[in-house]
Length: 218
View 1 (cartoon, rainbow, N blue to C red):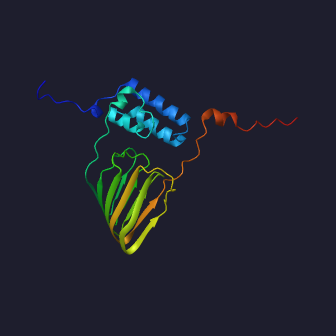
View 2 (view 1 turned 180 degrees about the horizontal axis):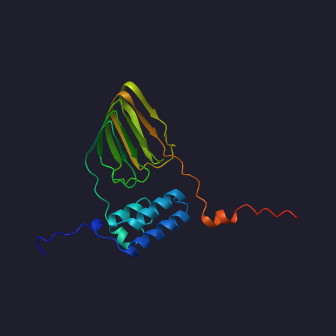
View 3 (view 1 turned 90 degrees about the vertical axis):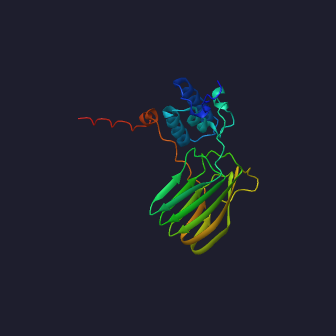
């Protein structure tokens, strides 16, 4: 009808069947070696508590197969042109399936900002970050396919550490260009922490229990 509001596909409510479809797709991806045990646990929990199609689709965004047919119809959200993060004696973190904008301004005054790109929804090939760090810290956790350039950051007092240099043959999904200034603070670019070893299940624990001590003869 003319003038009728068309609902955003991403905001449609998910059903139990659709959650089960995503759980199945995640389980297959873990069996293929695409997800670690910890990543599988995190995504399964998110899938079982997801409310909308958009939340479910974000869990499949970095997998080669779109999964259920309805997920393929959920268009990726257009990235924002610009976002801003300001912390003052506080902390801010972006992790999980957060949407990466085209430009990001960060001001950290005696606070900390952490940007984790491991599961981020990346819709644009580049990200410009302008920082103003004063007695604070900014940390970027970047997987191998995310490249960060911090050569244009001016350091007056403080430090800039880049510990995530990619291999030359690695395909690049996102290039980050960082500019700005550091006054008495720090910027760190490093890879995410390695996944913890898989937790031992109940039956594994039960089957490896110590043998009972034999009773001594009387």
